[in-house]
Every structure is written in C-alpha cells, then in structure tokens.
Length: 338
Image (cartoon, rainbow, N blue to C red; front, side, top):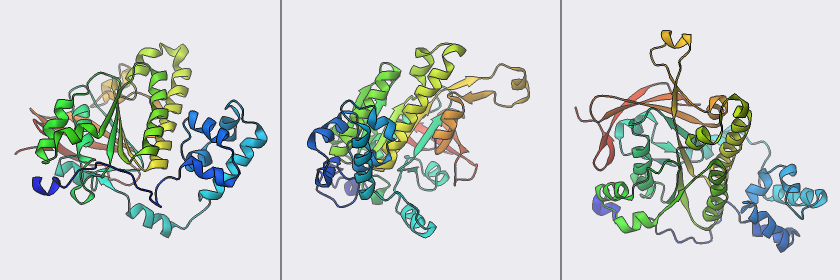
C-alpha cells in the first residue's frame, strides 16, 4: 500500500481544465472591463461563480461599481453559471460523483458512509482531548492521497485559531501512508488567525489560492474560539452571531465554488440551568442556531477508555444517527484495538 501511495501525491500543477470553477477573467469576453475585474478580485471574487452568487448590495458596496454596472456584471456572470431549476435525476447524478475523504479509521469512514464529504461543511465538536485537532491533522494528509485510496488528490488549507497546529503530526501520518514528508508539508498552506476579523480576511486569501491551485480540504480549528474572547456578554451577542454567520456563509461559498471539503471544529459549553439536572450529557456546542444551520453534518466527539474516542452523528441530512469508536494513535487517527 505504501509503495502504491508513493505514486506522486499531488504536486498539483494545474492544467487548463474544462471542469471546476471558471476564472473571473472570463467576464472580459462579455464586456466587463479589466479594471472592474481587478476590483472584484480585490474583494475576494476570483471566479465567475462567486460573482453570480453574490448579492447586488455587496457589489454596489465595492468602490467604483455603480448600480448599473453591478446589474451588468451579475447578468453576464449568471449567463455563464447555471442557476435555475434542474431535475432530481441530474442532481442525484452530481451527488454520486462527490468525493469522500478518508479519516484514517475504517469504522469512522463506515459511519460517514465513505468519509468527510467534499462540497459541504462538516462540524466536529466536543470537549478538549476528544480528538478534534488530531482528526484535522490526519485529514490534512489523507486529502492528498489518490482518489482510489480515499483521498481528494488536492492540497489542504489550515486556519489555526488556537495555536495547536503541529507539522510533526503530519509527518507521522505521512509515514504511515508511505508519502514523502516534505511533499506533504509543501501541500499544506497554514495560517494562524489572531482575531475574528483576521479569520474572515484569511478566507479572501484562501479564495485567491484556491483559484490558482487544486485544494481538496479547508480546515478551521477552531471556528468559534476567537468569537468567545472578542465579544463579551449579551450586549454583544447579536453582533457576534452576525459576524459568525458571515464567516460561515463565506465558508459555504468556498465549498460551493471550489468543491472543497470544509471541516470546522467547535467548542462546547456546559449547561448550568435547571434543565441540565435531567440531561445525561449537559454539554452543548457553542454558536447557537446559526452554527447549527450552517453546518451540513455535525459530529459529536467524546472520550472513551484510554486512547479510544466515540464519534456520534449529531445532525446530518442523510446519515442515520449512530456512533463509531476510533482511536488516537502515534500515526494519526485509526481504528480502536479490541
């Protein structure tokens, strides 16, 4: 298996491919000036899809773009991007082509019916020491594997808000799959976010990088920790939730445009009201309903015995509510030994 994987991991040199997102420069042929396209790129709109999906209000807020110009840009973009109705048969066909990224644990992959789904947001929440960050590190390597080995044949973008990213862990996982350690590290783009505004700005840079090269995974570990310290009390709750909603919307846009798997981790809070006396597990994920609605799949991680951890499907549009056991091993996430 190791020898098989040694066929080069993605040294993703991008060729001109007919599939995938269309570069925003395509709009030049439709009568949009190069100067206006530069303005779109400066605000993070690097693809025709991004322009087609954005609201007119957002376009008008860009300096130098009038209402008439915004109408023209949106009309031209929507001519190139199918945004109308389609049959369920066609959509089912598209869904059948979705790539799943292996987690490193066969039991966990079975629970997720193949692995982490690309093109959507997967949220993992749980207490400290439940394996959230370790799972992110393992996925950062497995996403680079060939598709027939459970990979995504793409690079990884890793946004770290807690200072817990460790390249040594990536090297250990790379060794397990027989991959070149230096190639694996070169294919992971890392950024440390220092506040919630910076976290948002990094997504604009992420869009630019995804437009240039093939990425399979975007990790944000953790999506909510900076919001807990940047906003205080009930007085700022509304502002916090609006800012968080914008951030999650940007993540979903990247998943839609580039087909990447977005994996975010979330912290938990202990319920201390009277109702907690009657619940077996009084911990709940933070971020409220905004976080709950933005995530496509929600996974609840909790501690088991020793190195074992338990993953439960907390919410999913198509996966049944079930549990699987996995373990944190020296070479990443794997199956629990009996």
